Length: 388
Image 1 (cartoon, rainbow, N blue to C red):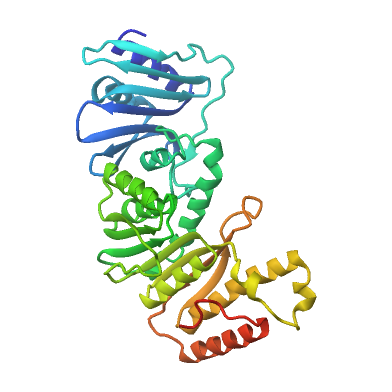
Image 2 (image 1 turned 60 degrees about the vertical axis):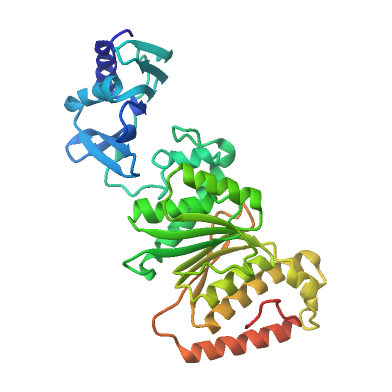
């Protein structure tokens, strides 16, 4: 392959034989569009190709082409972008095109189709498997080490990718509980390396088109510095990171939503306490490492369970989260517990999801408080952050 005509012939062959799975165009020559991706899909009128252009102002523009209109792919390869990476059913290939139109093949692509199958074209109107797309959001996923720059997930990070996508699905179910207009104020407490922070940021800003004021909080100053630098590099407006003790942290703003992924032991209680104090409209928290009650439970009535260490741990895990739910209900929240991921991937798979209704139920709040006090009496323990 030596010229633009060769590129056209290559695309014509791949499309004619329906072997093209994906084309990624990078190294933009202009400043308006950063990257483009072409994907096949099964439209109402037959096979189509969708071009997704990722602009410098973090928008995604879509254009759908029939096979006869795919000369546009040659224009992308030879005019708008210097590099093209091809993924086909018969192999992968890459090439660079100079400003003078000279083609340099960096990864040769198999010339013949042989017995290669046709590329699978997804139904255009089918619900996406994931809210977070590894190609569309490759910028932050690759920066965090979840995928490469073309959106291919690393094997060791597939579980993390599924985890944060499931979190987004559970958020999507209660999105209508958030304010419909204006800036959304979000806190991610005990954010760690901030996989979830960036995922929720992209969900709100790109998928929902919302303006946000979002803060990730964690004690580890070096991790916070890294996340802050990454947010700046990715141009994440309205996203900041703060190194602080969440027990003393105050965002200085109203809070619409509090999220937390695996805050360890009583840190989860601190997260919920913060959310209650700020009257956050939505709470999504996945607890981790229920140590406190293991060391404090003292109940003769439950000794038939607590004398067995493994069963005691299971009891303390369930009882701790049940008390957390009761506490939220005592402050007027509607609460449910959900499975975050498959238990085979991690035992830390419970999410506490709550929202604050416009009209609280005083009777339910009173009963929840009474249930909480009765349960702690039965367990012979009082959590550090109880009904405060």
